[in-house]
Image (cartoon, rainbow, N blue to C red; front, side):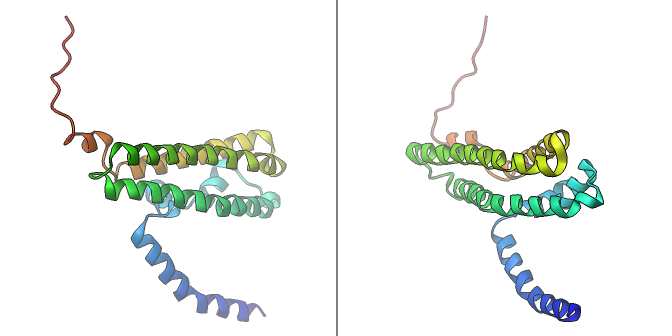
Length: 173
């Protein structure tokens, strides 16, 4: 039975790899970015920083996988919005910029609500202190990922530079 499972997984591997390559070619996924920044995957970071014990590892991984699975569409939406900005930054008018910014802010609110849903589940597995550490680390990883992605898109002043006349520097006497 175990051999059949291994053979089945090996048969699916080329398809999963091809799919992952196509997705990685179009947009960088969080896991790829996390590995570039930290040199290891997110699960390993959590295990090392939170000191997950063997007896709680199965339950933690289950909740973590649920958390990451539910987070994935949010992350893809955020990447999509940043990709729109990156590809269209020269042609974005005020209304499009307003709409895009509003969607990014709404996305941030959704992320906070999403974290709140998992807060109680994590407390049951890790206790209060390590759950606080979990969300601190998750937020740190999220901010590092955002910074990495932000460094690869044009800054808003680059967008505005061709629209606004050159302003003299403000001189204070």
